[in-house]
Image (cartoon, rainbow, N blue to C red; front, side, top):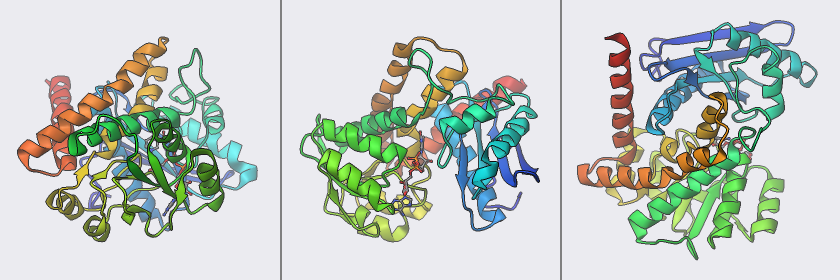
Length: 351
Ligand code: NAI
């Protein structure tokens, strides 16, 4: 754990094992300096325990940074479940997860992420109150992915204004990798604003659906990020922008919903050297957590939530300007800003 390359002074990581349901999970709390560590629960067939731990550590640190930059009074945490779950024991597994979350006494607040649904969170909620992403009341709550997609679209607009001098997405070509909850909603957001879409997913049915609904053109999964487009939007899993991909992209902008898109610091440097604008993932995919956090703190006015999500656009423009002035990769500049916010909160808490 302490030698894991993704370890970054994490406050806590606990493993959860529930024999009856077969649940094996890791809950990682990166920081509670700003408030309860908030971040969703991911269900994924990890190839090893070590891979699951690395993902939990990396994702929870990402949540700390995301929540700090979104101005939320929330720290960063994440739960990962080592899939697959036995479908007949899914309810019992999420009940057990709820018990484990409850035992953390509110230092971690869970919600849905990849592979986990609102229904799963309803089961968790039978065992703990430290859960969000439940069915909406007065428009607040529920599946966060439409709000995530809206924020990503705002981030794409900011990047298009910054890098291409465009105030509208009309006619811009965008390649989307991954057409799950976020990618498919993003496709709708972009289509409504006149963007031309090129899309790929490992699930051909999702590709067909998005092509039918939004007049998108399918691309091979292997090369979707290398298409002749203006913008690429990684919306599948992390690590899409490897050194090789960063070298070969022909788009001017990388801006998508997936967490941890940039596989290495060198890939970020390559984008910078090649003059490709990167809108940091956690800056622009914060719409969902803004909704989740609002639900958790009992916000009742949807306009307050919408206004907070709208801030993603000016915040992205501001970050991109700072990165240009500093001549550093935008991801690195965002990380530093987030670290400063967290360090200030930590100092205030411990002084
Ligand atoms: P999802 O599981 O609904 O969608 C992921 C999609 O990617 C699936 O359709 C899957 O078939 C596809 N996929 C997987 N590997 C692929 C590949 N190599 N090439 C093309 N497609 C591939 O997950 P969701 O919720 O849409 O999340 C997507 C990303 O956005 C994740 O990285 C997640 O952490 C991030 N995110 C999601 C938020 C949310 O509100 N759901 C919030 C913030 C970030």
